Length: 500
Image 1 (tube, helix red, strand yellow):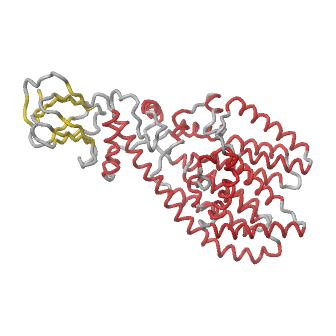
Image 2 (tube, one colour; image 1 turned 90 degrees about the vertical axis):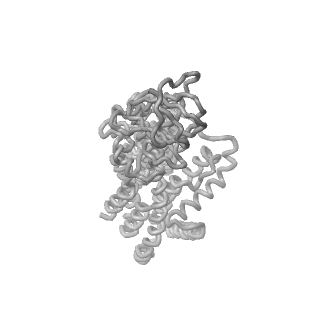
Image 3 (cartoon, helix red, strand yellow; image 1 turned 45 degrees about the vertical axis):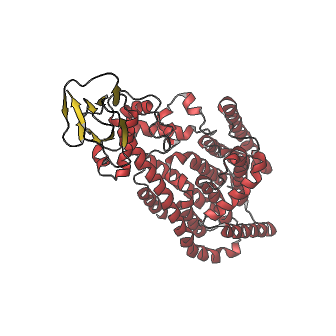
């Protein structure tokens, strides 16, 4: 019940979001073709995430982001259940507390609030359940190897899961598991030889130790949205518990498997991405925090479980509340990007004519979107932008993004006609002209002038503008869909005449 409540809370917090950054590759470019399913994204094999995105797009379209958010939160929920399931053998109370901490891990907002990260979260979830299966007295080699395969087909983090399970299978001399996992690894190697692309850069190996340390400190601190002091204490307690288990010869396989998985993850990530210098990126903090909290809960000495259960329950709010503040800030950033991007898409969707080649919809917020490709997808699966009425109710800074798209992308919007004359003209009344949807007009200015173009904005200093030369003829064509918005052109000097 606590998990369901947490997921509902997160879903409500994610209102107003739309597809973000890399996610557009899945939305616009992926199909059920073998090449699209196997083509890596940032070096990762993403068969399962791509498959689900295609299914959701085909079923629900792209007008609503809600189905994708529900999918993302369900995968996040499977991670939380994996944490609980691994810990409940040691203590159901500690396991439940750990699950709630992960459920509301605001420092991992990139994974939790961005459905695209079902790849990384799915890899983590399958890894947790693989460890759970292999920790049973009589593990199923088939289920274990299938879970490892799922982890690999979600994201590159599955490689750490593979290494961990394979290592412990060797230690335990579990021949059946070794044989099946070897087949999985062989198939993954074949994929990598055919499609794999290394993300590593020269010098990354030398940077990896520091990347490892920074990742470890960041992940431990992320559990309570705390700093390095909390992280140091966390590792100190964890090390003491591990040594206590060693001295008492207690079973702590799950804890060691969790630690090995995250240690291998940090090492492989450092080798491939240390040059980017982002060990404390939210998506990485999430993965590290999950495995570190599993390692802690599953190695607590039995003699301390009763006392620590009460202490941890009382301490949970102090871990969750700071995380909720981080979650709010991270989600707020995504919402701001979504508002601006959806406004830009609204402008693109309104254009009923040719586009200027090579112009991006938003080169900063969504460089992956090709306007023509987006319009082809939108025609089949619906628009991701606002309706005209929705956009009109939004603040000026958001509305102007739609104007920017219209101004930059619409071909033949404004053309200076060299040598042409305005044979018959009528001076405008006031300092503004209006060009209706699919309408055209021509005008000339008797003096140097400035023309400000706006459809949704209020013609402020941020609106789009061109400089007019005296005596030149200008042709305007407002190629927007009928029933949408007229174009308003405001002049700095009213010495403008309409040509008939």
